[in-house]
Image (cartoon, rainbow, N blue to C red; front, side, top):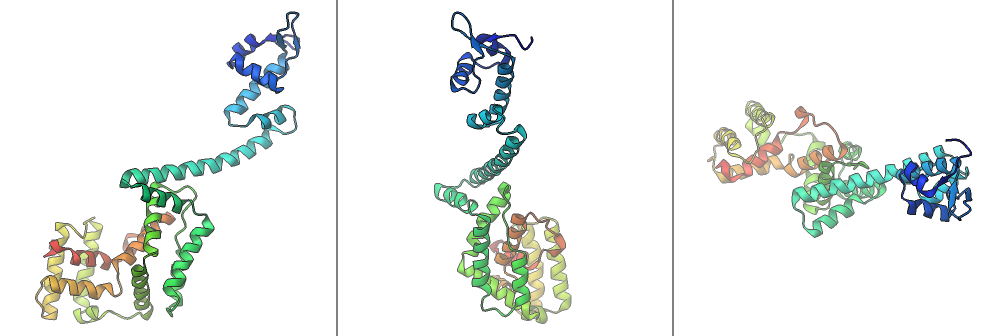
Amino acid sequence: MDATTLYSIGELSRRTGLPVRTIRFYSDSGVVAPTTRSPAGYRLYDLDALLRLELLRTLRELGMDLATIQRVLDRELSVAEVAAAHADAMDVQIRVLQLRRSVLRVVATRGSDPEETKLMHRLTQLSGEERRRLIDDFIDGTFGTVDAPAVVAMVRAAAPDLPDDPSSEQVAAWVELVELVSDEDFQARMRRTAMYQAAGRMLDIESKAGEQLMTFTRQKVAEAMESGIDPLNDRAALIISDVVHRFAEVFARVPDKEFRDWMAQQFEEAHDPRVDRYWRLVWIVNGWDVVPNLIPVYPWLIQALRNDHAA
């Protein structure tokens, strides 16, 4: 093969693997024009046309449009310039596809109905600015009347920020988080918890129970959490039964359901399970590592106390 060799469309097809019909289309479009024609009128192509066609095929397989390819072949654009632009565009497409995949996996796992599926899609399509505004509105609405600047600053500093390419777990956490911060009851719980934390004082039940019993309780609950015991199963009920009986002795009460509910209510004043859930969701959305010794024990205790099996 040399620069003077001429090829028919059939020969180009064999050398490039492109169908004859496709080469004819490119030829008619002027992207790879024939060099000359045979005496019988058949199109003939030189080595330069063959090389142009091979480059065209490569760029098309990489997803470039025909108009851009023509500019590359005509040397109006360099391959490097086009490659950089298309790589950036593909990054965006990949992020969109990853987000869709994550939403679909959540839908499949949760068995979502059409309405929930639409909600998840809409929430994940929000821009970064829109997501920040949603959380800012929650913080302003929740803490606008609370004189606890340190707590408010902490909540703002740890605001959830869904990444551009979230996992299915992060998508599920973000959707649940949005539902949570939109709930007025949760906002009231968050505000009440912040006020207690800002005051820095002990709960009445803690001071009256005494340091020894509170230390015992925190240790038992921490051990249960480290062992992965669900606060709603039977193993947790045995632990709670022991704790409740010890508290009942101190408070001279009957360790029945009414007393358990009272205990749960007392601890909820500053350690609400829904507030704990908020922080867990924030950790997931932000992709932070959960530090076991920083996980509060009281939300687990409250859930276990509220569980009827504990009776």
